[in-house]
Image (tube, rainbow, N blue to C red):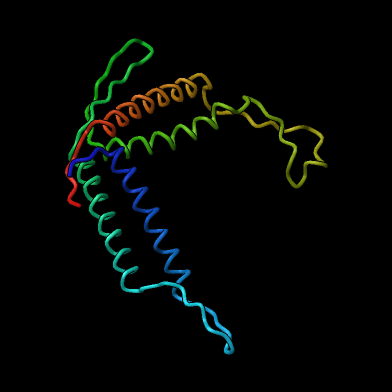
Length: 179
């Protein structure tokens, strides 16, 4: 069977919902309580059937995830970067490389976001001897705010270009899945 990553994600979501349904059935049906002086109400539960159903769902999940991973290792995506100086750069990466790079850039973007939000000079009012000290202390940034903002914006644009390329790939690239 052929499917795209987007479709495979939907199938995986449905399989996981089905698995949770059967796990719930198992949780509810594997035990029951009855008083000694009354007829027990035994829930419908067939251990073998439920276990086999869960095993089959797990096998499908493994096959689909393996096919996705294989496609991510072997399929390439062309990412087009546009920079402020009107420079146009195209880069070809495998999907797994793209995902790794996006995670790296996302972490870097979070750090740079913290740097760009700092004030150049902040008065420090804490510490053991703060109440006894007569002269105030200040904390200063040790970097160029404009340079940090420029890097933040560049990384933001690169992430957007990568996400667009990945979305296009996920919606259009088909790969084989043995179900």
